[in-house]
Image (tube, rainbow, N blue to C red; front, side, top):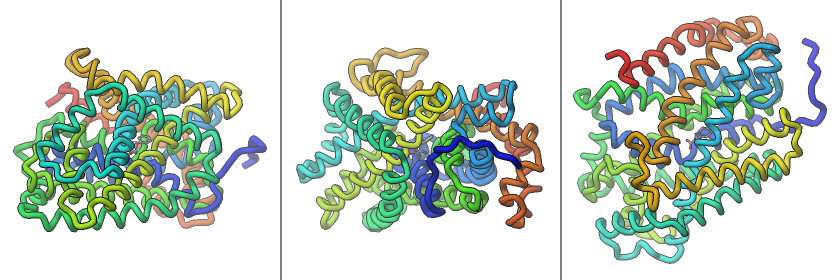
Length: 453
Ligand code: PHE
């Protein structure tokens, strides 16, 4: 295929770099903060089971579909559709992705800011001698304030913008390779402490024993939303990253590795948190504060807890950073390639605009707590709309694009690296993207929104 490419496009330098960056995007607050609290709110084990089905039957194929689009087109999330389907409205999938990126980063940076506050508290030995009630209380006091949560949010946005400004290869790719494995080791250590707490078994039962009587139909959509959010699919992050992946990368293997890594870390986060939730008598449906209340509790009860707390919150902040970077990159790649802005200018404009929107999300826990729109705060709306609506919708359209528009021949080309790899997976993949994924996501949607039951 004759390929006219832009001369100076950045790319990842190695296979490991691709995995580190993509897993860095996938693994983040979605796994350690969102997964446990959403699982807690939606009944535990049965939710986990539905979640796992969605990750492997749908999430993984959508990830592969995004890599395919990105690597083939070598453009940003919107430009890729324009290039592969000139003159057709498919690029609207990309526009939706840009909107989703704004919303996600707006509320994500709130929580990312919280991790910095807790890191500082960990340094200052702020967890020492507190009771379970005190942890809950001090979290509520912090969260409902204005100055500190806003300050940390802006600091976090600045760090994100700084890395994007520098380019991805020499920053994120280099550090994630070392830091992500360290995060896993640390989670395992904390899991061991959590599992040896008295009453741990109840937490494990909650996580691993499905109780289907707890399942309401709306839960299906939440499980799908969580899967999409956690895997970073449905908004073009992985199209953008896919566009930096080199020709010889085995895309199906990469997508599988990233999906597996993401799932393992989410489950480990559950094993780290639920035993402690029950041991310390915390409500598993506590909501967005769950990990910020439970983890300090564990550290307080751990030999060497002071150091573990510092290392843990450092890594959590880094895991969040490698995700926020991937979201901002979607917007910046779009601004610079489609609107012809210089990378620096694109970064500043995107980061400032998102920070302004994000401040409303942060204040939703404090001064704007009662500013409800149809029963939800602004934060809740950003979270709900992006994860449960825009990402699944984006995912449906992406698989339909790949299955019905791009077509088997081009897909085979990408999945087999122009015939160099076997590509025996292509037939199954086509069935999934043409039929199974669109139908399953549509059903989850209709159930979740209460349109069928
Ligand atoms: N997957 C990230 C996480 O789990 C969040 C994210 C969503 C990143 C969508 C990029 C796109 O934290």
